[in-house]
Image (cartoon, rainbow, N blue to C red; front, side, top):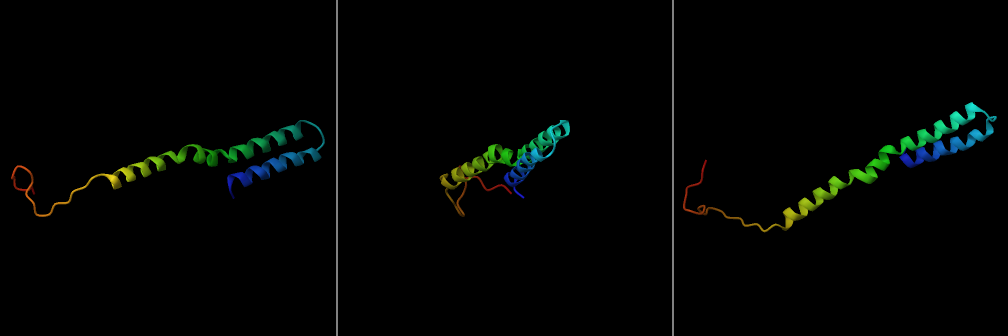
Length: 86
């Protein structure tokens, strides 16, 4: 179940507490349901706000690597005429 769905369910349940007689139990139950609904949204909101930044950075890195100038040499001696190290 998605975070938004859970929030809607808990907000609806909080509104349904209006059927309970006025008192502390009703108020505590309503506030508890509201808080629980918003806490259920914590991770989806965190993902939306923060978790996509590393993906953007990785995409930028891959783009820079893809567009970087590249030269492939086969069988050529390294500059300076030295033998390749093994």
